[in-house]
Image 1 (cartoon, helix red, strand yellow):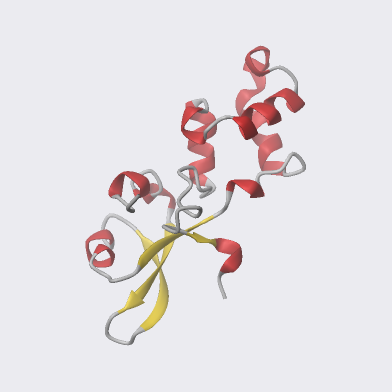
Image 2 (cartoon, one colour; image 1 turned 135 degrees about the vertical axis):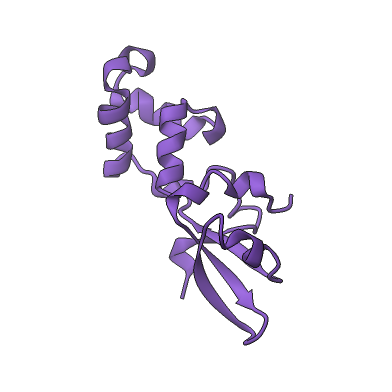
Length: 128
């Protein structure tokens, strides 16, 4: 798989940071990716988004609780209890999640396309 605009476009409105190799100085830099910076950064030799792995989303995480109680709230009959919802999120491929849940994961910059696993993105915990 190759990193494509379709992987990045959903993150653009949410100030995604990327790491790239500056050709002039031969050093890695971090910069915010936006519609304005995309044409410049796409021409860099090495360019990877910095994302959170899906494994960061644990049942103890306030973000998963937020997804359930704030976003799902009135539709809880569709997902059952919080525990059932947690299982649903872990077992479902992110792009098949309800739009409201998927969109929130994108805002929080979770790796919804398995780009870290493919070597096309950087786990934010591994930055030096």
